[in-house]
Structure formats: C-alpha cells, structure tokens
Length: 126
Image (cartoon, rainbow, N blue to C red; front, side, top):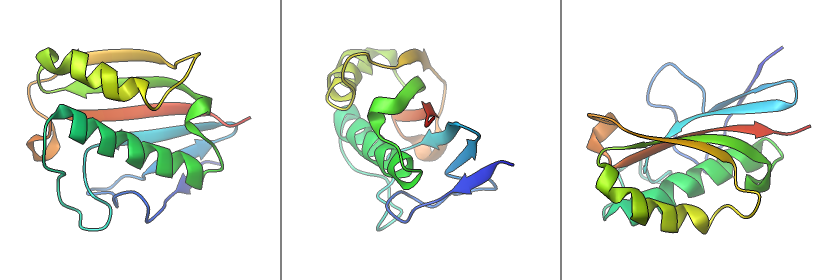
C-alpha cells in the first residue's frame, strides 16, 4: 500500500499531491521548487541559490522517509533556461557523490511560481 511521506523541513505541497510517496522499497519525491519551508516564499538569487534550496528540500524529504541522498537512483531536472546548466551542475555535484544518480535535464517554458529550477527524484530505500 503506498504511503505518503511528509515533513515540515520541506515546503508543504501547494496542490493536491504529496511531498513523496513510498511504494514498497521505492520513494517517489514530487518535484521540488526553491521554496523556503519556513516561509513558503521563493528563495531569492540565481540558479545556484535556487538549486541549493531545491536540493536541501529534496534531502529533507528523503530523510523523513529514512533515506539519504546516496540512495537516490534517478532525478529529473527542469530548467527555465538551459544556459543555467553549468551552474546547476556545480551545485548539484555538491549534493551527490559517486555513483551519481541517473538524470534527465530538460528546459521547459515555465515552472511554478516562475522559478528557475525544479527537481524530482526516485529513491531506492530497500
């Protein structure tokens, strides 16, 4: 039976979805945008600052399920501008060690609240 995972250490869902769902040994983390969990406001700054907040939110949700970023097997990164890719990579590399998760990165026309980056993840908790 799927189980919702939620933590106040990450932003509350802003719609009819869960922060994450655990299904068996897998955790599916909803797309995280750079919202400060304390205020619900978008983090100011460039894509590095926004990516850092997104990854901190992701880490908090994975920890609430009993895992760590080392168990992330796949991410999808959505960028508002592919020119931000090098900066995103720099910040992303600070959060994941080898072997890094499989990843897809795409440029999209718009993201919620007009942020620069959103990331979702699949985590193996088994």
